[in-house]
Image (cartoon, rainbow, N blue to C red; front, side, top):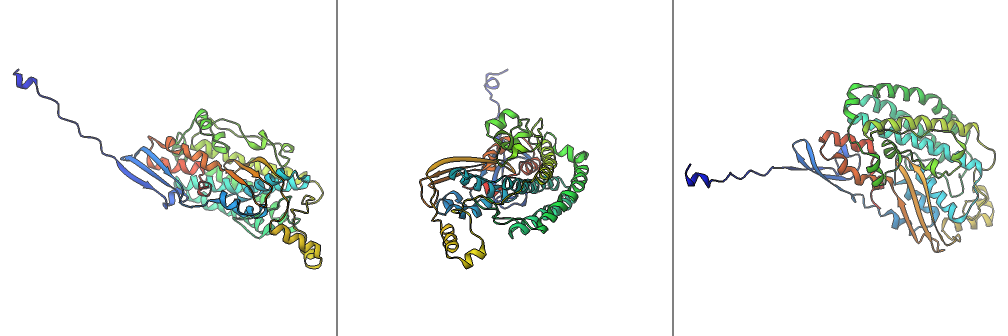
Length: 402
């Protein structure tokens, strides 16, 4: 071999080429206004960078410029799939600050509303998982029961999606017969529909192949990302705010906390399925054990007087304007209160300096917290699996922007 041949060097290898794909912010598969910039090797995701901020909410600063009673509509726009839970969580935070004593009947009525909202939230998530795997039938069929829940909310307060339901201290009025009739009709008819939806997907070979081992997350990783709610329970951790730190008399009800094993899309689907059954059980228990009494607390500085008194009594009219305009005295202090929202621990950290508006208010939005794990969960997976993983996490865009 000649010296020239000895000195030959290998030809430089070409660098691998990747493509960049913008998933969102307006693509229908994202189920909301947020974006993922994906680095793709063919159909395989190499890297993912999530982007939030497209809604430009600034709802924490908006809340710091409004009287306490006027913050409720802002909480509606957090997880708008189960807005009554947001409303009631905020009201209980204020009640904790002012040390209000809430009647047992109010607690039970709130539990009924919150569990109906939880079922509505889970209907959306699980039917969308089916839709994104190609099963449109279940999506269309079960959605009618979500509308029946909205019929109940509409009869209670006049609104369906963003409800502005309840008030600080309880409900603005006692529920009428039509509301109770709608509730009874729902709890009697929904189990059959839920069974049919379960039989359509849960043991379906195509659905199982698409969801098992899709987007898994371990319990350790989920805890390190501060997961809560169904996404954490699907990973095998039985944390539920309703049990860990009971509120609204949840300690009076018997229910189980379903958990998964692998934390994949199928486990997240199964956990929400079981939770809908448990919510139905809680509602039935609340109706059966519903205490007598008033539907609101005895806190006239926060609760609007009846309209007939406002129209005919000067003192009631003064109270009405005082409450609406935020002239009620608020004690100084710091409180944190959390409820089990549709997607996990929904917390309200409130600092009051005694003014007519909060000095500082921070919302702990579960979606914003666990969405940070999404790039790690989809790395190395196919694009179609990333879509289903996002659906099963139930990321609500309204919780992403603060």
